[in-house]
Length: 308
Image (tube, rainbow, N blue to C red; front, side, top):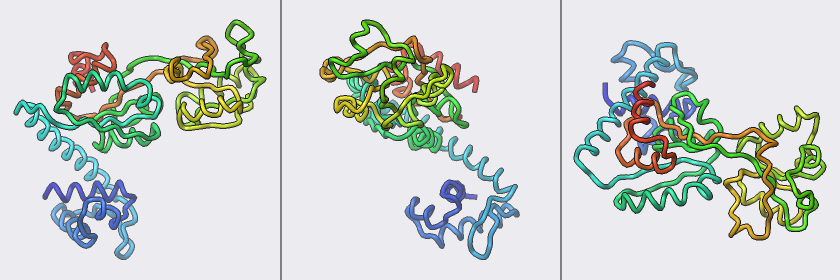
């Protein structure tokens, strides 16, 4: 049994049993992958995949257990490599963070500046995507951390730790009638205007819909977007009233917009950091998390990881 055989069966499973895609992703040939899978099956004495002709059609029952164990083995191999790097005292390496646009654009920059000052030899990579995509990156080992509000806490295979709470606020152009109220609007007053807000996959859009529904209101959502910058653009054009995360407003850069605090209207949301269960964190990863969420110091993180 060889490590590359374990990698092959995991990759083939992740690629929907498409051997050609798995081979391309691992920079090898399709016949080579197929041969190594058959050699592993012969050694184990059980089929890992069911077949119709030469095509893989499903994981067998023992195959599902083999793949699960293979994933654990590959994670431990990666942990061993990281332990070696840590105790050699290397001051270089790569920290890969998977996150959403709002976090990358508005929340992370000052944290990253502090981290780079503290760890000049560490190369930083930020990968953006939907909450589901960034959870996949962390689970598959393509990222060290996943940072988002949605999906992280419920994703199997990730340890989720709360970082901070935020709420939705209203954005309007100068002179908008809602500003003349001199107070936060009610849900009824807000529902009277067309709304521009996040796509359903992001930033508590479902919470917003539920809040209006519980009040017996049906808001007129005229546009949804994947990030706050797009929402701001269309609010500036007068398309509607914006509903965005309060952390996405910068008074200096957004001088042509006005923010109305509506924290009392909608439930607060929590941003989480997700870490792959069973993973080993190098020292600089602990440092980054603590910079981002000071209450998550090294002792707290280790206790959470050990408990899991």
